[in-house]
Length: 401
Image (cartoon, rainbow, N blue to C red):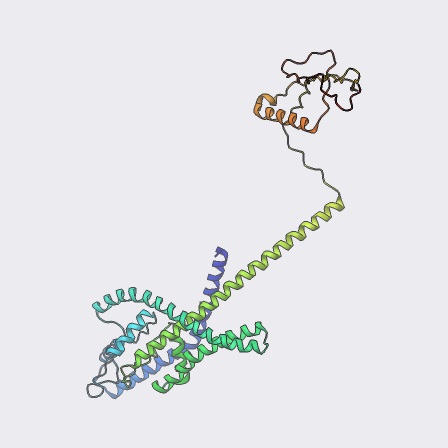
């Protein structure tokens, strides 16, 4: 990610946080001030009703009650009723361990001993990655099952000749609706019935739990009236399936955004290529109208060596003195050109050029100048052997007697 994009994203997140802070402050601060005033009025009323209790003793009593509530004590429980209820029975402890590895952390029950806090550190370090692996596997299997079921529905829509683009949109909507029905709406009505919450409170708890926010103001099974030991473990399994579903939804959204990003890059590449082609075409047309510009100066090349003069060859003797051959007038020999300075610098290249040029001229059949008849054959040129003539050898055809 580029630095500018990262800074822009950070600015958007900070702006989102500030706007949320302003909204929550405007909504919750008046309620807090009202609750504080009511607490002060109740305190003054209690002191007037009980003049034997001092203000300092009442303050110490309220502080001890607050600490006890933070430790998991329930003010509705006393020594005569519900004495067997505990916040750390097996079901509640299992649910608390589940809130650790799911990183929800409601906060309604907290650890008060040093040994418990030390064990919680290592327990979380091992349990959170383990639960992440389990969540990925369950989310993959759950998403595959839902997509398989939706695939049958897509086949039905395609049989009805529904356009494929509309089928894809319908399948995505069905995927979201089925997941919300199974993991949001159904638990909402269950919590309304079991916990006695309103619909708003129940759906608030569901959303806060499945987003792993976990404020702790509403916790399923925390009421002392709930005596079933299997209730909170069942709630934890619902949390597992709900988190897996939301993980699959986030994975699907990430894949979709990745595909959209690739298509956008491909389209931008095509537009860039078209723009470059259009720019080249316009430049060529403008150049043709204005006139050709001066060509750039050619690079300095090494002057090639001139081809060597063809060696003089003697005229071949005729087979018979009666049939003289027509010979072309001898051309004057070309004086050899002195080698240039580059021949001294690059002797191997010039020798290769000479051999190649002489071979090329001999292959093309260049007209070599003939030496006059009286000249001697060079010593290094082999003489062509004469044909033997016997008394019985017939003459060659085309040669007059």
